[in-house]
Amino acid sequence: MLNLNEFQADWAAMPQVEKEKLEKLNNKTILVSGHSLARCLCYALIYQSERQKGQIRVIYAGDTDGFDKGCTASEYFQAVDFDSLEEIKEIDYIVHTGYCREHAAHFSAAFAQEIAQTNALAQLSRRTHAKVVLLSDSRVYGTGKPNRVYAENEYAPLDNTDPKCSDNQLLRTIESLWHCQQKGADFSLTVLRTGVILGACSGLPTHLDKALQAVANGETASLVNGKRLSYVYLTDVLRAVVCVLGGSLTDNETYNVTGKNCTVSAGMIAAVLHDVYGDKARLTLTDGADENACALSGGKMINGGCAPAIGLDTALELCVMSYMKDTSRLQLPNTHDGRLDAIQKMQLAYLLEVDRICKKHHIKYFLGGGTLLGAIRHNGFIPWDDDADIMMLREDYDRFAEVAQQELPAGMTFQSGKTDKNCFYEFNKLRVENTIFATELAKNHTDINVGIAFDIFCHDKTANSRLGQKLHLAATLFTRALVLNKWNHRKADNGSRVQSAVTNFFVRLLPLRFSYFLMNHTISFFKRKKNAKYLYDGMGRNVYNGCFSADILSEVTTHDFEGYQLPVPKKYDEYLTFLYGDYMEKAPLSTRLGCHEILLCDIGKYDNLNE
Image 1 (cartoon, rainbow, N blue to C red):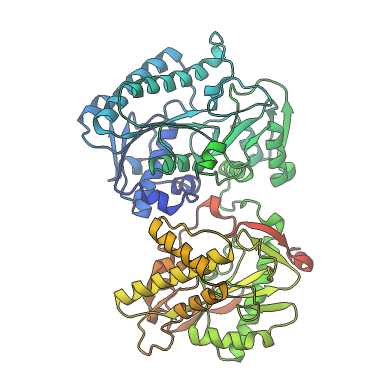
Image 2 (spheres, one colour; image 1 turned 180 degrees about the vertical axis):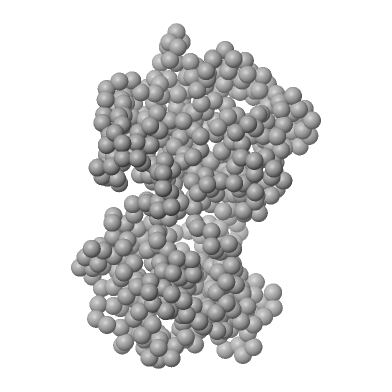
């Protein structure tokens, strides 16, 4: 088992990569070669096999000195030397990171090594028809002009007589070698050129390292304020590799890989760090020459459907945190513009009101989803979570809907398809009046209440037979797609042309109100079933987990939540294991930004709750 720290596990987990893209690598064999970036890629692929059951076989060509022992001992890992490549009979992909973000101590030795390795890998690709991905970086473009951003087919001048440009020359030479090999053979070659790669505890060196370490320790450091450069966090580089291997990007193309809003000057980096760390970021700007690199245009990658996920602030903060001496109390990425504490206090007030109403009317409910997980793992909110969830069985769910509006205090509203005619969520909500909390999904629905929300889910009965469960689940997903795609004015695209075409036909054909009626009746189809043995979450994201034993939610107990005893399932361990697997393992660091992408946020008079 890989022995990675919290920062390494974050990028190795590749949490920003869509699950369906990773699944395309299942049961594949990938040969990786190169240096530090190659090691990071091996860790990520093995992590997917060990933690996500990806069954990806990784072959590393080269010296494994510096590799984690858990990696080299993994059943999914094999190390070979280049002389042994002729013995490999079958392989699906080759990823060569070469000197991407590396510095060659001796140009001639590095050049000779690359010639030999390129020849060996190219022969392997010819023999096995393996798809090749070559990693390069922004230095290949040469020393760019100060205000120029370079696309894939543009190059800046390169002084071949300047020793400082040796890495630039080497990267161009490596690319040329590979293209020469491809011309005489039948294999696919895709080139990924990265910006400066930031990766906490990755071993990838950058010119920012000393400054980031100084910020972590509250020390003084300087940054060279030269031209703008493009930066990218390691996860987005790994994501680009997965997109190429999985066929999401066109083969035989060259793509620039940049981060989200990450083409900046040193002055902007200093400003971002000061915004997060205040006076602890004691950085000064000096004149001088920075890297022999340039800024990149990442538009081609974005248009190909592989947009970056991690912004500059998160990338820098993860790196700074990795240098902190005491990592037991890590400062989380700065989210919600300093409002998160106040939002959680508002959510707690919701919970206590729901608890009061349910006790008064003898309604059974449980903490649900991330709120239940927070109760068990943190005795309160997950520190980075921005919402609260409860769950009920159908009878209690309907009874709560009947009494909630009359019981809620002033300033709180019960929202459902009946109380808000323009609302078509599949579950009910509580809202705080005179606040705004809009996600990407909600920001365009200006005709409904989009205040701070509290979600109420129902876990409904489903069929006892496996066939009946599959049919019920399929019908639920279909009717939900009818509503959500019609309401949000978008086309269904679930990976199947036939299914998507059928869904889009009925989206156009059926009125939204009728589809909403159909969805609700599909979800509650088995509500009168007397001997139901199984339940499912037809309203939430956990619908894809399928059904679970009704016995799990048969009994209630209480658990500490922010100092209050609130109801949880007595068999919470079984329920949370069903939802999350190893639920005591914390989410990757870079995802601790709240489960929602908040685009509009105004908590009004409640802002003083965080003081």
